[in-house]
Length: 82
Length: 203
Ligand SMILES: [Zn+2]
Image (cartoon, helix red, strand yellow):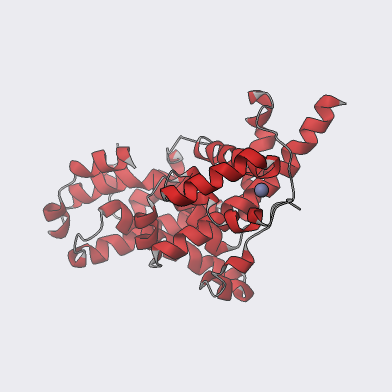
C-alpha cells in the first residue's frame, strides 16, 4: 500500500481535487503530499484520465430509427414523425 | 449540459402544460436520445432501455401539468428516467436494493488504491480501441447501481453535482461520496486492464 499515513486520509479529497473544487488549505496539503509521494501522484493522474476517457467515450446521442418510430407511436405522436 | 439548455429554451412550458401535442413532440425530439442512452448505460439491455424511454415520456405527458419548474425540464426528465431504470434494477436483483438506498455512504467503503501503474501514455488507439470501450462499459456495469447512477449522471451525462442530487433526490454530499467511490473503483479496473497492455507493449 501507499507508504505514508497521509495517503489514506487524502483519498477522500481526490474527487473534489480533480474537479477543482477542493478548498485551498486542503489543496495545498494534497499538492505538498503529491510532491513527495509517487503512488498518490499516479492515483491522481490515472483517476483524472479515467474520468476523461468516460467523458469522451461516446458523444453521439442519436436514437436508433426503429426505437424512435415505436416511441412516437406509443405516445400517439405519429403525425409528428418526420 | 449546454446543448440541453439551448434546446429547452425553444420549448414552451406553457404550451406543454396546456397539453399541446406539437410542443410535446418537440420535447420528445429534444431529449429522447439522451434519455435512451442513459437508460441503456444503466441497464445494458436495449429492450429495458426502450421500456424506460417510453415510460418516461408517458409519465412526463401525464404529469407535466404538475411540473413546478423548480428544476430544469432536463433534470425532471432525467429523474423520471433514472427512477424507472433503477426500479428495473431492483426487480432484477432485490438483494442490491439496500445498496441502492445508500445505506453504506461512509468512507469505510472506499476502495483503497492498489494499482500504481501509470498507463496514461499508452497510444490513443489502444486507449480508444473498441475492445477498451467494451471493457470500460463492463466496468461501469460492475458498479453497484447506486454508484453507477451517480457516475453516469455526473461524469458521462455531464450534470452538475447539484443537478445529480436533484435527479436522485439525495444530498450533494452523498453524490460526492458515491462519485469518489465510483471513480476509484473504475480507476482500479482500468488500471488493471491498461496495465496489462503496458506490460505487453514493454515485453
Ligand atoms: Zn501518498
